[in-house]
Length: 127
Image 1 (cartoon, rainbow, N blue to C red):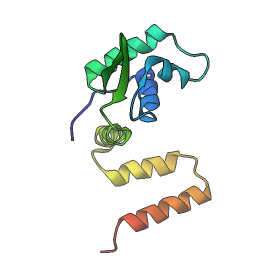
Image 2 (tube, rainbow, N blue to C red):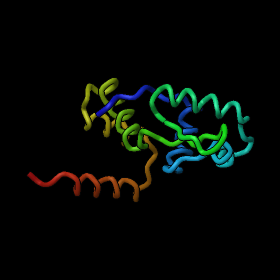
Image 3 (cartoon, rainbow, N blue to C red):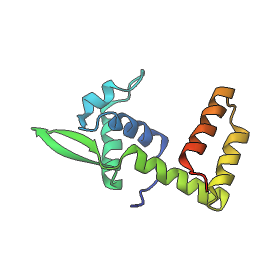
Image 4 (cartoon, rainbow, N blue to C red):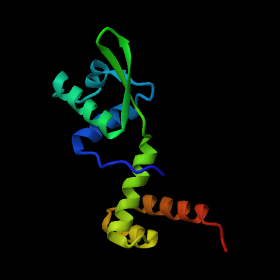
């Protein structure tokens, strides 16, 4: 798995929009998907240039000076890397310690706990 840098909160916001636009979009399309108050065109443009440099996005010319930006990294790939980093940094790589921490510290409903148990049972065949 290729390692990617860490996204800032603002960069992650741009990436979340682009992940919902897998074929890409021009800056105006991206801004339109932001909640109000919407950021300035130049702000989004700057974040896209940073994300391009970091290898998270690429771009293609649409017309004139207009470029469409699209993700090079899937949300799943990046999420896997972030979770893996947390697991190794704080739990010595132990998935069970990570899950135990999450379950003990997350306010989960009975139905969420039941769903989690079902996921665990279905993903680990009985030995």
